[in-house]
Image (cartoon, rainbow, N blue to C red):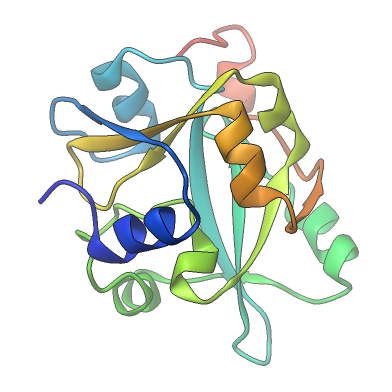
Length: 166
């Protein structure tokens, strides 16, 4: 499959320079980091939440982190729930099941990104399948996220605190 058509069109419309990195099949962000031989700080994953009005928001954060939902609820002053698998399949209908590109705006949703991503020189994003990543430089990532909300709403998973490059 390679790159999802929605993602490719979005990046081209935004005039973002990117290349595609092929890796062995992987199901989750931890195995993607290992398969692609990249640092977990540089893989930006998208986690989708919805509020009581069915408004979707994508949180973009380093793969090594998890969302602090209480912090996120305070930022938005809303009660956010994790979108379920069926919702994700519908929202990302040109992507393989579970391969969510961290480009929510391309799919019509609000985006908030974690400030910790500023530490990375290179950023990798799911391309829409389980074998490809989009690689962009930090300046291109900043260009994509320039007008999006950002804050520090995630923290490293406790099991990874002693293994930052997992």
